[in-house]
Length: 80
Image (cartoon, rainbow, N blue to C red):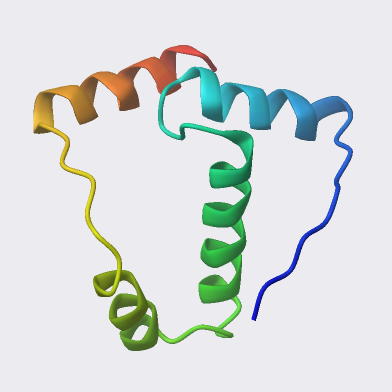
């Protein structure tokens, strides 16, 4: 299944989305939105953790050194 849509963000939502990308945690706004949707679905119990990991394992992994990841997290925290 595939779905396409156009979204407009204003105010705090637009700023948060920009910060998520500027911090380097996500490459694009679309990637950030997808991740947030998956997280929300898991929080609501609509996605089981086991099913989520099965789906994730089907896709190639992005390799990122731990220091680079820590740097990205620090940037995200500093952007607050």
